[in-house]
Length: 366
Image (cartoon, one colour):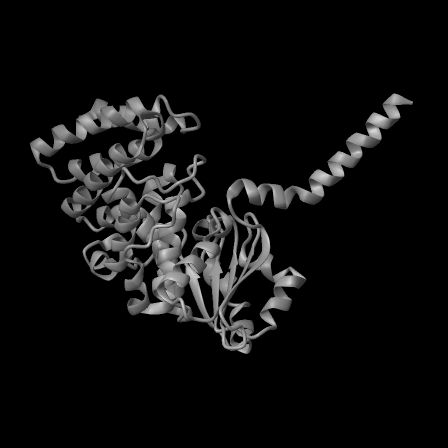
């Protein structure tokens, strides 16, 4: 009889855990999975904002942070914000849900579209094709659409320029403004590597990553005048010095982007990294400068055991840039960088043995 009671009890506990799993996970991640609403002021006059997102949205509760920013920047304002976010969701996944379609049937001033983190590496035009079915619904709802640029996983430091180009191409073709959160994320990694933007899984945003993500949304939606009122915004759990640096990055973004080709370039094939494109165009010096900067950023931003893959990839491209210049000093640097890359790839799990063999072949022929 006891075993029957134990089985029934375990089944009941299992059922409760399955039922409560989204709530438990939400609490662990500091955000809310599913549909959540936030309101400020008089709801009959409210500016209505809908966010269709995923874990990049609900980690650390980005919508709630956006609300806190509005309370500081516009305390007399009226806002109604709804977040609909589930783990790993694409926009196609959103449109498959009845509750999301019911939301899209309401009136909205703004609808923010967050595609999944790997969307830039799906088949060609994936981001554009994901957005297209949603746009007529947003137009019918009276809203203006915005798309949020994702960022590369920390291990794949060199992938950001591909992600950036994919979103810029989609913006150009669909005329949907892009919020450049991914580029800002990448820039902070380079310029302020002491600021950790990622959670421990090196994929999702940490608290600082969510802060710059929310700042980027705020500035795009509410403009410079309201954004200026966030200059000293630092909620209790945040470091005010870090908040100030993230604020300044978003504030100065237009000027920053002009000086960095990876934040502005639009290549014929958006799936090619800007450094590789510069190589293909025989712009070896430009490629070397960009890759040297990346290498320095990787060394500064990563603990030693985590930097191998992005460092090895960067060293290979850097060596190629240096070898192509046919300068004896550059050739010596290229040789050293190939040796370093070989040593790294011998340690990296899952790297094809052909990579190491190709490096050995080049070294043997030098």
